[in-house]
Length: 206
Image (cartoon, rainbow, N blue to C red):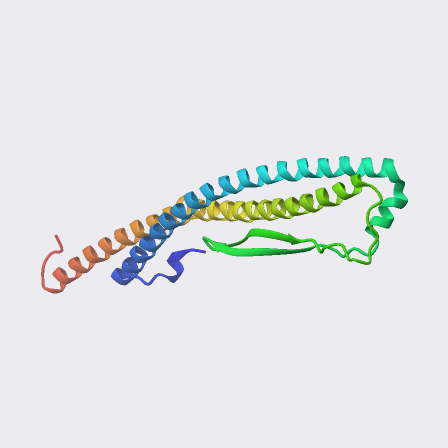
């Protein structure tokens, strides 16, 4: 795309180029400001996701330990019996928009209580395992939300950085060069018009 093909000759063309250059420079300034804010938020989200990931892995490890104890005490049949009749957990995610990026900001998990008709776990290890897995599932949801938020904001960081580079390295220099050429062409045209006017008035053109 070249601006020269769309730019009319003369002063009108130079004014249009000047306006386009001003708009591009203001746009680059705003994008750089946005980029700084996004980078700060992205770094924060990475720390949040890292901490949430550690919490999830720790809780999962504890839950697996209780489950192994329960299996050793009661076998797989005890686990199948304890799981029978229980409902699935439900997850809900809260969303918000930050600097044009829609990202998750919270995640909650609802673990239904054990139905009165369901058989109770045959040993206390499985009771502890059930509670531990509920906590691990909640932590997993929080980690997933934090990780997704970091990924989405990180993608916007990359996209914004590319747009700034395109403006600073390509579009703005091109507009400046075209504005310079337009200024030279206008100056030459005005000099030629002056010579023609002097000739028309009977001068020698000097």
